[in-house]
Image (cartoon, rainbow, N blue to C red; front, side, top):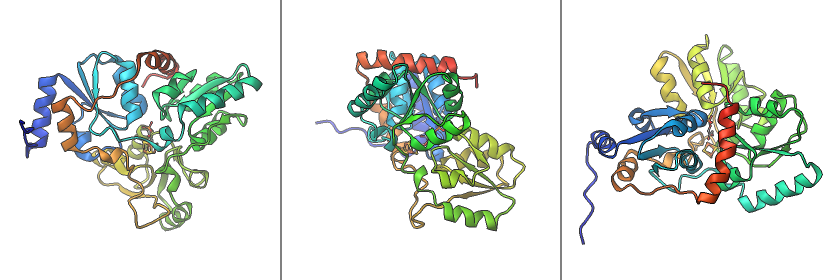
Length: 321
Ligand code: 13P
Ligand code: SF4
């Protein structure tokens, strides 16, 4: 039996070589470790990465993020092999919304609301996307809900994002699937209040997946990309940030002089503001997935076709970047 070649010491060099050999493109979300962000061809939030996947024509996409993001890339770019560093990189929102239960929920709501529009946050499985009318991300969720102002709307699967979107779009009647993100839900509102007292000139920036007591004390609410852009543009020298600390890398690259403070978690001894799924990906696993062209993310063709339309609708309804 032949043994696989050992992993090279210079991973960066080896990954660059494999990218050329495979004609591969590496996409990375902002929650990836710094080295992965630096070696990626495109770093972005969920919306930006979906846009890249929709226009790219390359034989191999190496997706450094979580499973639903790689599935989205496969749906939008079916001719590409979509490889991932770790197939176990899931998401509590996607896992908390099984397609069979969601299908029953939608059917039940449609009985009383025949005109129901199902808007699903991109953090869900391909099977749930296939049951939806339109997809959104945290970047475009408010605009997309506003677009359906005259229709009953079911919003899934994040209850905290739904609450914020409902408020921004002036909708108190959204029907909501009660999911949540284990990372954003655990930020400690009391610790945030203390930080605001200690740093009265700081600006607080949080992701809309955070719970209401945190969002109520936040100056700027937005997607990962919007948080990064605001952190750079803000006149504040100290920024208190309520999202995964992978975003710090891009902020530090542009404004290294600013002080970045994380909102502590409920359990102050843990690294709770690191997404345990996103952080399963490593440079070594990225090298291996490019070398072995495995593991790959696949989507059954009937589900892919049904999930494609709501994703395309999202791209049509989104403002240009
Ligand atoms: P963004 O769409 O802001 O990149 O967020 C994705 C995500 O998983 C947040 O937890
Ligand atoms: Fe999912 Fe939360 Fe991780 Fe984002 S941070 S991928 S929503 S578990």
